Length: 324
Image (tube, rainbow, N blue to C red; front, top):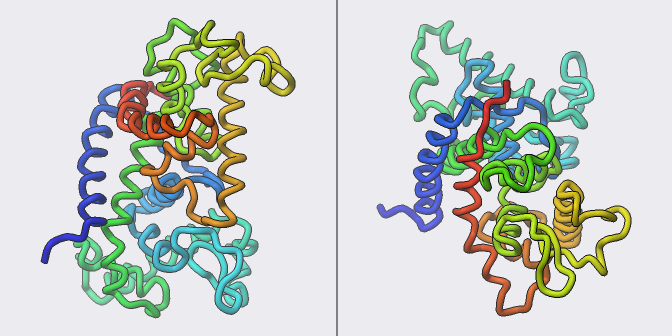
């Protein structure tokens, strides 16, 4: 049976990211963040965080992502069926106590709950002399089902495995590639270093790291432009007559204020769209439209930003640096 077009895209994405990750590792060892990135973070960022917790506990990285995709669509749901909340739809009446007390507002405790349950399920198999349980991916649907009390169809879990792999792969590639530390590296810094700086600022604000780089590639060629048409300045083509006021006053000489401007505008665009589209901002294929709503070019130029996605990702990969 041929793969669906969605599966083909996911496989292609994993293969491309494999190349990117290898390049990143060659450039320097960078650590995947182990703190929860926030409810507003992208799905790959959340998947990478879950994967890091699972790997630390000796579990397959995709396991909690599989469970969360089925239970909540990989969202920290504030309310669900009955009193079920969170990524794994935990019942507050059953689990809001002991080591999981307060889990509804603490995703780290939700992840701990799933990991504890998955380890218990595996240990049960080991006790029954099923010592290879979980080593093969074909066991993972059953494993997640048992960790979640067996109330799930294993076939459904199997169908989202490829998606889980993709989300973990892209999340890890982003987290391990864009590890820039410190202030703006300077106008004369390599473009990759500037890209890594921008990406790190964006990710810290809960945005995709590619976003400001794609914008800057189009607006300024990823340079801190000191002159341009009319009174346009900086990486993002900001108008001095409009934006050189608090909180961005002095931005022509301060790239940190420029990237703050872009992040603020991008977050405002996302906020306006989330009511109508709860998944807004999660599809890289629509990043260009998001940027266009920030930069507001003429209609015929809106498509330029999306064309720079691959270039932006390549710059972030080559901009990786050691974090210690």
